[in-house]
Image 1: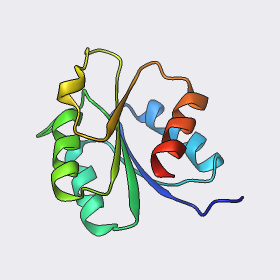
Image 2: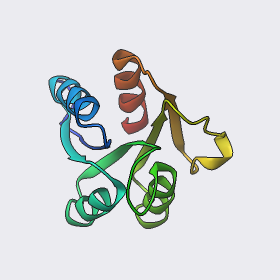
Image 3: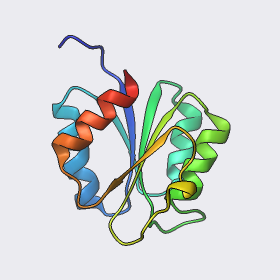
Image 4: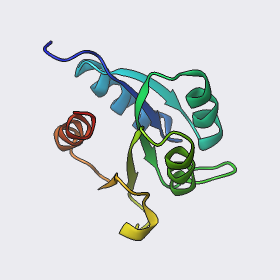
Length: 121
């Protein structure tokens, strides 16, 4: 592969959805870490400085949703790219942090991979 492996953190509370996207990303050559909620994601981010992008769902249980997680990531780790997704809630562009993208569910995996590569290039 022409590019070096880049690390993506997938934050999704639905395990089947998370496993499907993790498998797809790994097959595309990404290193993937995964979390079921924002609290797990923050713990992973604190210990893994190699993460280049966070791909998070909006609707999750726990102390914060995906939008609050995205804001926390932007504040604490500004270089990390962020992609927010949701199938249940309309997300306004002003709710998404600067330099982050929104991909509505159901997303096309090929389009998602293209977006991740574009953000990390």
